[in-house]
Length: 181
Image 1 (spheres, rainbow, N blue to C red):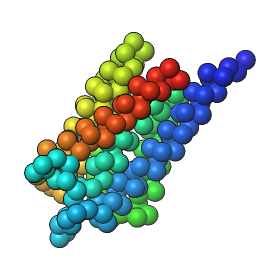
Image 2: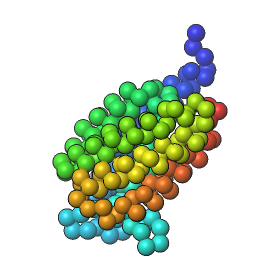
Image 3: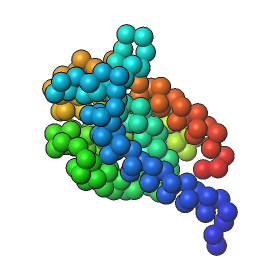
Image 4: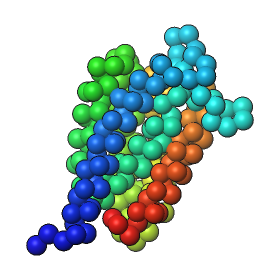
């Protein structure tokens, strides 16, 4: 028998899946199109803290890392991996190949690192699981992405801070939704 809670959980999981799916091409598009400064042959940057800049897709990716956890909780790990594959394929329509490859690899490897932290914690301490896995995921994602996309980790501190801001906002949303998942 289907319960209201299972319907809500299924709906929430599919909404997170679609939002995550869209976040990958959005972040890749933003990197070359939106920012307060655009570096020649490099990313467009946004300020994330006094004196720190990051590629503009950073805020989208920070939220995406939290959406991944919602997907895993509601739909399972396979849904996250499918969303990464589809999102990467969609990115190929709007971003240069090196950026798409870097993004896909970063999302995949950070998903695996995120999963290793999130999965054992999520049943007992959901908010802690989301925060801890987001921190691990965003560091892995940042190092892999910057290294592959630009061959340079100059923006690593900004990437981490920007994703932390976005993950904190996403985690606050998870804390609010906690009883609904």
